[in-house]
Length: 387
Image (cartoon, rainbow, N blue to C red):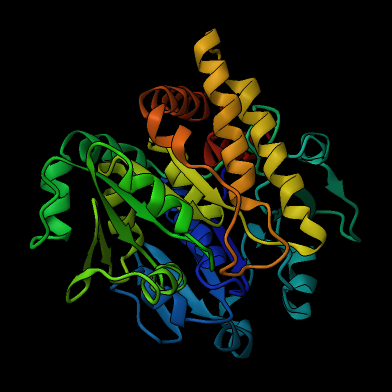
């Protein structure tokens, strides 16, 4: 099947996570199907204008060849817009009834694009068909995951092409975004988190031989560090603080493309959410993931499933396996919480910095495995082609 038109529906709920994934996804779908009409129907526009500087709060706009349409406007003008060959329902959002009724007669494929998960059950559920009352429209569940048998992870061509340049031009890239900061002879990392106590991290970094520069991204991250500085004195330079051997900079909000360049250029990344963690893994740098909090600590089940997929995907020697065990314990301790709070945690960051080079090798191996075997849009393209 070669589609002439594709509609992607997205309800923006979790800040920039859902729209972030859909933005990348639609851009890559357009890259794979350059002749097809690709539309994204959104219930909110504020977040889109933040992640792309060219986006506006208007009912209908073209960004990178993709049409972005405000959902209420789309509904009111549905007779003019009509349906598409392929419908992609992102993360279980509700597509309005009138659209579905027409799609059952005119559309060919309805894809329920689910959230990313490392749990094994997604492999069995991936590409399962959902029975609907239509003779022509087929609905399937597409399950992103960290294994070859799953739907894979989202990696857009632009990101893959640009990340290697940023990795090999660290000083140039950082100077572009932070022209007044001096990163010379410092280990540089980004921190993007939910509310969290970072006392243990700052203590560990001040015991390292080299100086560290932390780029703090997002309001929740910056407030988390402010809690520490309410009790500890620092040298202050507008948005820059110095605490012992540590420099901390409150960064502005960056577009997705800018964020991609920065995390590719720095030495390590602490990040959160689905979209950002995928980028952090793919750049092949040491990372920590602050996974989204869920009731009854179900996020720990998801984290351990991810770690299982990670472990089975890389071939390591005895030394690397020993370091991986300690690294994974840090990842678990970093996330073991019942609420997002500023309560001091039990995580010990020493392994992350003492075994930094080994962890980097492990992360590079994992990145290469995912790039070679788990490209979501390439897997989806192959599936559609064979229908």
